[in-house]
Image 1: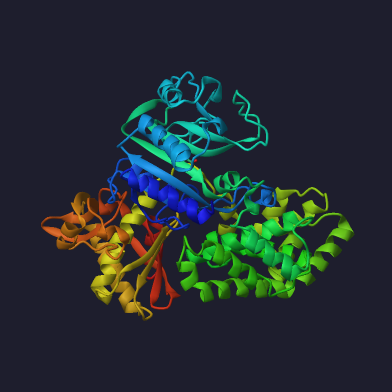
Image 2: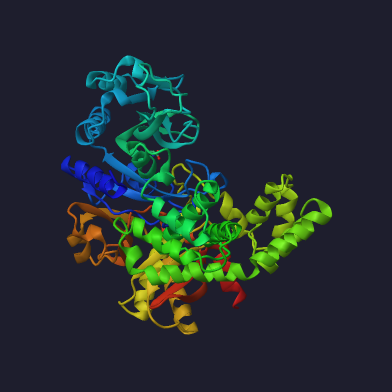
Length: 600
Ligand code: SER
């Protein structure tokens, strides 16, 4: 079964079980400064797992784009990918363990016709905090999984997020394994045996761990399941690894042909190229063009790493385009926007390739010289490679490591960042697989975004609509439709309106209503969004009270309870984002105070 068929079978099955299909969220999380990328299917659903009402209901199914860069150095082996897709079905306070396990079992054995003799499961073993998950084990037994095929493991293996050491919603999980060996599967399940491959994880979120380490039962018990598409398709096809499936083979064929080399013998290089170009495409598609900051810096690293591997295979500038075209083909059915935006996406990749391609060979020569003279590369030298030849720091590290030399990463980095905006260096570390953290600072910035949105409409007109939003601990970024540069007067007026709303200390409250009711109440929000067609209630946040409504917007939250908490608001920058879209970066609190003060 192809990946395209598999995605569809999965979605259709759960739709037939009363789930509503929801679209994949962007790879760039909105309003969540704690992570750079969407790293798991559950990530965009965190507010709903915590109890907010999802407009599409309480049984959801999706395939979610994910990017994980924590293991980027491992890419090239048989299992690691930076971009991957996760299939998931969700119960938000609806069904729980029994029904979830039964549906998974039915999907695997009746829908996909997998022989039950090829399946094994693991279940939470229990520990001092939480008792053994007898309930899940009993359901598996009832369905016909023999006791010997059930392993009981602790919080490192059968808990999500793994380990259970952080506060927040979490719970035991049960994992499903598929036998990939040629021989008949052994009677007993041995989780250490790598021929058993995990294909599905059903998480039962039933606890909220307090900061003190107590596991309190959650009012709303949820199910969060995750199935890695690439890996599952590979094992079901009997392929040795993901790169041998039709998701990668066409890309690899193109690399073989433009490099006149074979995959056999060049597996690592070709896997890196295929993986990195695929991820870069998906990330650029979600707005992360190559740059020196945050997500854009990761994309730059991915593209440049691929370009260097291409050069190793003898391919000079120009190789990226045919590879990207092949990658788009493999993903087009699931992400049709890749086809509509093809020219733009390939242009962005080609630009980055050209920029780096020009200096790559010279830089490599320079690196060889530096290394030959001292047997290592100093921090200053690394900076020269970066600033003159466009080598991301991580590339220099990789080159040093390939020579079998050790890198003193700390001095290396501290030298490097002396010359350098730190945001990039932080980018590499801002990876987390866990639950989003909604800090006070990000809630303030989120509330400021609503006030800004409203003020922009008051000053510029009702054509202004939100086109994107991103919040870090430092600032908010707001993209909106408007086709002219804002004048200084307009910017000051917007600031003044927002600051007045702050000084009035308006209450920030929400109500659940239908999309129709929200529109009638004058709420602004993402009406063109797929959710607008859906029944059920959405959350509407109001700044102000009945007598004096300042803004009303459809939004999942969370927000601060009073606008006064923002202290002050100032626009740092207003610029073009893309055609017809402007971008504002703004700050609150002391940072805003300083800017306002410095203007006298
Ligand atoms: N949250 C779990 C995971 O990421 C299941 O979706 O594996």
